[in-house]
Image 1 (cartoon, rainbow, N blue to C red):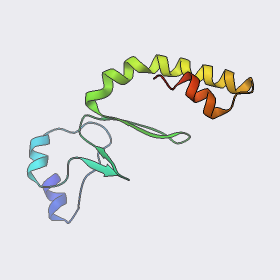
Image 2 (spheres, rainbow, N blue to C red; image 1 turned 90 degrees about the horizontal axis):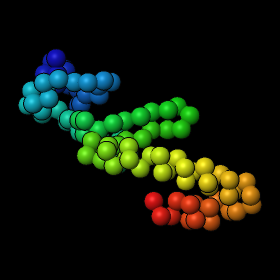
Image 3 (spheres, rainbow, N blue to C red; image 1 turned 135 degrees about the vertical axis):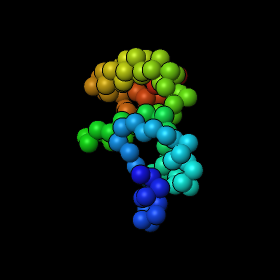
Length: 101
């Protein structure tokens, strides 16, 4: 299928979901990594899209690190909100509560 798309003049493929036969896909010469506005997305990377908040790309090799860090980041964000509600500037709240992460 990828070869047929190349023959028809396509420059690349974006798949929503899993793909198989990655080596065969690479053999077509079509790009496997995807660059979006300077961000390289490789097969296996996690991409989350939320129409309200934007897109996050987590490289496959950093998924475990991010999963470990998320509870701490969420807690820090809650402390930031409390500090801002108490009168602290956003800059100072981030410096105080997220500067160490």
